Length: 543
Image: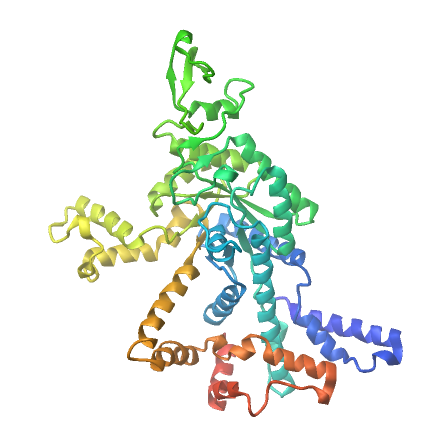
């Protein structure tokens, strides 16, 4: 591995020494070593630095996936910088590397948790600025994680510990973020302007959907209205121009189609010649044959296969698509997006079924062989019930006697130890591997995991704390677990930057610095014993 941190330190050290020599005695109080250390602990100076760095990572990962589908990538949705920070700290601790692990920014969670209007549904009603603001916040927290960990390593080095190799080969917490721009928050100019803000905040990958911007719905809800391909292509172009203007030449565009679950369109595009994109889109619109004499005043009419037809229009002015046309529309959406600048696809599906996903993706691959999917392992799916139903059908087709199972009640806890449950859980366990291999899924994400974990953990803590367990509910269920599992924020003062700040104060004020650390700091109660420290040291060296 390239010794990035040490190279940065040496370069920064030389730069500061040259500056001290240039500016003379007035800089005497500045320590070249301390300044170089601070520079090293903040490798990424701007969001654009992050976007360029992480875009290159994604491009490399996409190429590696094309060579071997086992090289798929993963992410979890984060609605706060602290959540993202703790996720990446945990990734490094448990898996020793951040390789192939990303972050996801969900528009759903921005709407539900970050809007000044209060909790909102996923309908693009939240402020545009909330999206780039969250991206910036996430990377602030990840940069702080870098600074804290490197600061600890430098302190240990000063105290005589042999951690030089860990400093030299330090792996940053900064990873790619796939950021949801919904349907673009307006016309293509609005999409371009918001995209720039998101890139400047650090986003290297922008995910956009083909719904009507001012009628946007969550992908797992009804009432979705899609736009003609020309409208969506204009927004893909807007995003690419934003990347190019800001110098992020490798920027990633994720084109999401909601056509699988959408049965409506707001516009009828204008066809210039038979068989063009507009013509293909219009062919999906449901229409009834009529005679010109039967046309009503102000009716909209089309000529189709030499006949006059009237598109089915609802009272709200929206047009209906033909029943059963959704999969064909998805395939055309995907192919068209890839042929017009998109890098990755996103298909919203009603259930997590590898065979169904593969059916659509493989049709796309017939035209674009390296088509790749970003797939939402959504909490909107009832994973347990979906996979128990899939296995029930498999066992039935294998001739198994299924009379012991109530098909209408497969969620029942009594089935948790059954053969059906075991097989279903195994399929859930291998879903990402299978999807990557069979359905072209390059990136697996869960949009709303931390929304649900927060609710679950508060439910469990509240039950005990306000009940008979009292304080024991917190100590046993939270703090004792943090200590024993080595969760970084058990020393919350350190995680918030207190130790880092103390060192900075020493740099700035020397012996006169008023520091928070010391004998009376209760965080000292969480200091690991010398034996534990030695054990952790040995483990880190082996890793």
